[in-house]
Image (cartoon, rainbow over all chains, first blue to last red; front, side, top):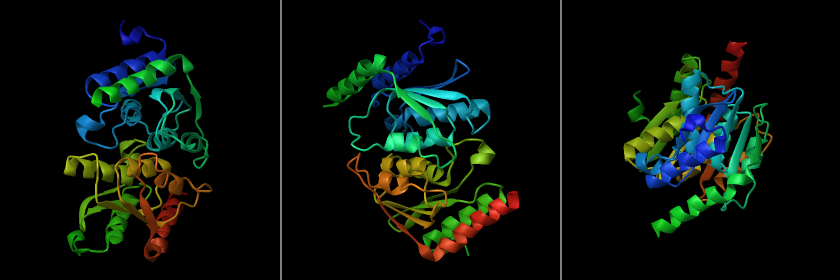
Length: 151
Length: 151
């Protein structure tokens, strides 16, 4: 099935994460949707590009800003396979996304930084978030399998 | 005086912020130093590029990763005119910078997110930070004057 026929956006994010896996990257994928249409998708490219910034979410926001010719991604939502790190959470707020849906939680996060950043209101903008448990196991298995394969 | 003759790195960051001001950008500048040498410098380009990611710190980390061909910016320190936002604080930790020195604090920050992110230890890496009060007034005046000029 082509990705433009998929209406379950998290499934598109997972396809992106699978591409990352195949390329030896920590398998995380992200999609940005506006008015029910995918306007950007990306997967983690940190190792290939040797660049600490190139998480799936950052690449996705970069593509979307270029596509919309605007730093304000209004009425846009992100679907991402893994709960975003502080850098990506901050970028999501800076870009004014309205909502983030993630499939699995970071297992290293003893803190509550993701939620704190999205709800901090420092920019008079907060971003809603939720977990899509339907894809939780698939997303976390991808990451577990990836690290097993690297041992 | 040429920037390669300046050994006070915050002064170089302020020169970058002044360039941002001249170009109609919120005046923030940043520099990354390794072994006592400037390896990257940048200023905020959000408006010109219409891209929510392009804060001075992100551009600076991007330049440094490309220069060192590595996502790990080991033994590198950042000097930045304004206390970094959550996105930039997260990027600083992800890139494994060892220390950040900033000149003035964010006046919108009612939270403590900057310090929490730098010290969270989620990556088994924390980043030291301090404020360089010598340049506090100059950096904050640049920002205040910028917003006055926009009214």
